[in-house]
Image (cartoon, rainbow, N blue to C red; front, side, top):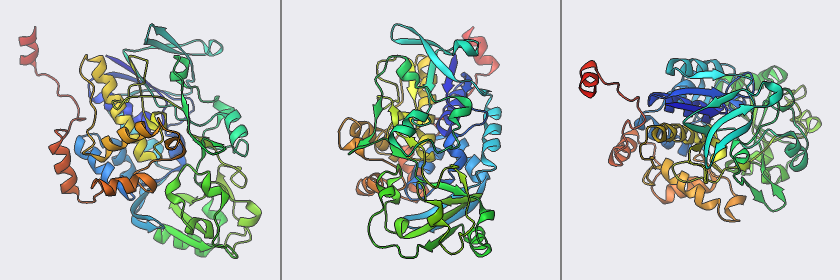
Length: 438
């Protein structure tokens, strides 16, 4: 049973481990020289409804990625505008921690492998392969999981954003993202809100060392710093309307500089003109760490999503699954992990000839996967973004009684759905079982 996962972000790593735990031989292909993609500049988890989703996943038996985040935590149970009981992981230590998790699971990780094409056998994928100029290396499998994301194409950032922001995805060095589903003939989907196609990444990173000592001290001690912007009025900021992370569309994020401690200082805005930033007391020497052009731009995301069902199988392809942003308008690392786990698990189920798992909507994870699929089929829905941590989907969670921080209640719901430890490692038959089977 061979599974190939294309894309080593949070969703791809989660998918690879989930498939390996079901007994598959898993190869994870990553375009760059490191894992996690935008997870290398993320850092927020367990905030608001993400707490519920995380505990659901732990109860279902696939918590490896959340354990990795916990192991690299800088702050727990912090609050910032619109968000409660958040944890922050250190972006400097998270990637090698995830590497070790993959090694423990027996996943074969291949770096600097950029898939450029696919081989099809009717409606079934037979193999993915690199460009002929890169040796035309083929990777065959019984099932595939695409977690290539929806950003990282320089021409897209130039066309729909404020030009290439020189972000952590490093397209110029390792090549642009290639949509596997699109190469297989699937018509992909793009988010659209008014004249804006896609959405802009919602935060930047500042070097802590470039901030005033009192800001650094408070940030390290509390995990969050909020500094009012002199002269900022109550009006809306154009940058807010184009953000992927609509849970931050609140006045505090237009009238103040909001910083979170994720190793660097996470600045909760898509970009901030450097000259204006340096006029704020304490930011006179501020320098962007990611993206390097954070004074004028950020990456554009949510182009190239795959149409899929609630088992995360891509429409029209018999053995291709998707997770993360590829699976739709779900924003955030927690959202990437939960979809990645389900995609990897179902890829293994398909290879085993077993029925696909659809998580019921009595759980937040199942409801989000179904609701986002339905919303992506509407013009209004394509202008929205969905996340467990805020905005329209958190409100839905509350309306449907899905949001809770009561761990015992979450476990009861998972058990009532018959999904306790469903993603746990498949038990291996003992010698007597093998003998009887023979």
